[in-house]
Length: 350
Ligand code: BMA
Image (cartoon, rainbow, N blue to C red; front, side, top):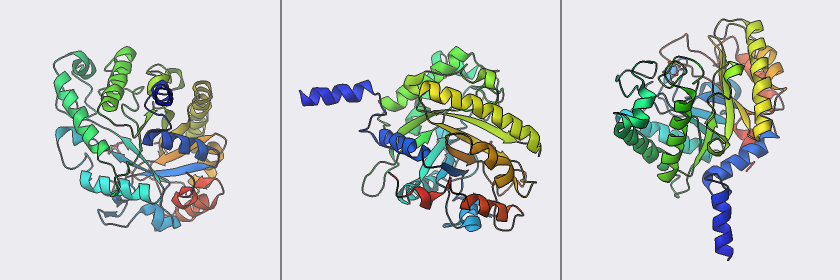
């Protein structure tokens, strides 16, 4: 009888039950939401503004003395069987850094910029009706193969003791923009939802019980729930909002409007919320972190804020401070604020 009850409990709460690694991460996320806002950075330990591939480095740690609480990595090109992602990050190194981040008490989030399966071009090629082709058409078996490869990688995220490492997975992001083959110009909301659900069901069937699933459109409040696959398939809600124009006023207005909406949906659907990608491109304003970003984000119950990558080969893609950058003193002040959380702040909270 007890066994039956436990089985029923696990089934009724879906894959994210308290028993799974994902369930434990989700519980921890909800706990941390009450403590402060975790600060995250994409590709943090693999390259920075002025270095690449050296071990033990991090622009964040070198600027403020601690690693980010959340590290983001991208799986794009894994589906092709490549040993490096679209930005040249070797997947073996990525696995090593994901496990290291878990062991230091931090959290990991994965995004995915897969190639267009119909045209063989990158994620930004919107042509070919790729979503309908992977769901019901000529590319279905290829896509199944892609998900198998992803499931191997996600399933291989384990410590040396065999403990699974849970991750926040944020597939099919920024669909409400028209720049990806899964975006608004290339499929209907219904097709998008099917794509998300198919991805969820397939990875779950393949045993990936270490995934917390995030739904993450880009700014555009009217469309926020237009592509939502449903509460059953989503554990967290997020939004991607950037300042590409070096305009603090526009960014403040955009972010405020988007976070108002995000937090409304978060409480309606009882899902934790995050600013899943952000940054002020090239960081032109020295006090941006404490004077522009912080006054806005501190008003919302955000679980984390993830700054995008400091691309070593493209000075335009600079989103977080490094020691020599004029924003470094401000980033230190940002780090010292009581409710910005870096890895040492969360490592004991489980
Ligand atoms: C995008 C840009 C690209 C990059 C991709 C995946 O937003 O930063 O240069 O290749 O993310 O990291």
